[in-house]
Image 1 (tube, rainbow, N blue to C red):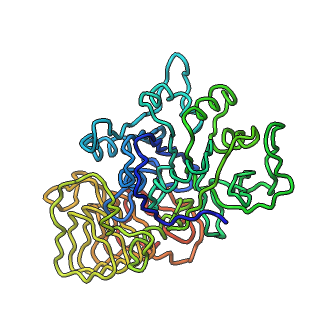
Image 2 (cartoon, rainbow, N blue to C red):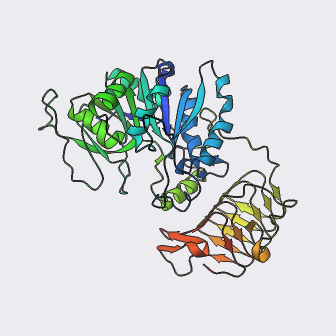
Image 3 (cartoon, one colour):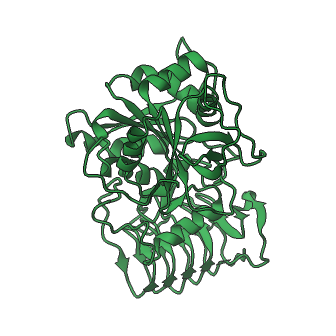
Length: 444
């Protein structure tokens, strides 16, 4: 029976001997979340109006009492590095050795290339990661949305006396998972790993390991969350697999082949790995659901931390708003907003209608809050223009939507790249690119 945990609240704190390694996640034109990653990493993408995706992961650490946190970043990391440094600079107040430290990709005499993967990044950062005397490393993706008390995972890791414990998602889904599939036997020991596209074949087992040939197994999606004993991590990266680039597919799967004890820990709460634009959109919509008990922004026992912006309250002139989040510092005219996440500093003009959408907002106010910039073509301010209609769309930051624009996917297109015109369509969802200008009267 797979050990399940929705949100275990353990009495015994185990955080003193563990350090978290959070990967900010790289981005490229081939990112699953492009064009939202055109100028930022996946972990820096806004979520639920006031937050960024990495806030979910770092908040889980802090709420679990884990306050030694390293964030390893590389591509498109400027905004992410700034956010982490500013948002969590006061973490040291929690204890003398508490910190959230950014480790940006670097070149050195020992390695003049950028990080080649998760294993390569950890190997090259071991000299920093070993600064504190910890027993385990907790490895986490920085772009997932979920609530987990890591104490339950750490307790299970220690109880089973495992070398490595992997967290798997115990509720089956039909979608393709980017982190692959782990195969567990009846004792929750991991006996195999496969990528999603591969046939279900166990990893070959070394001569000194247990023979699992006749053991029935169950397959569970990997969450990309691992607890690895410190000495095991060092030995795997430096001795057994000194040239491996990827932690999961090369190092952890290799540890299984070597006969090391790799244990599985099941999680059955809310978890979204942001594998696509569509998944990101639905994750935002999920935050609006009051019936979503597995993940709530209003849980006083598990608060979600982020950077204080010190913005004024949102100004609501004569708007009708239902089932929506409205971020700080917005200016809303006589408009209608339904089932929508509205980010900070968003300006919505009179007679505009927004339904079932994600509006990321703006980075700054311009000219007394008008949203106008000098020399801006067509005189279109940042925000949603008068009389415009936005339905089931994602509008990235600083976008300028003109008057009487309709963003409705008029032709019911599933996939389309209209980047030169300021938008793409992914999974039937229109994504307005950051700082795009959509002219007056456009129909998308």
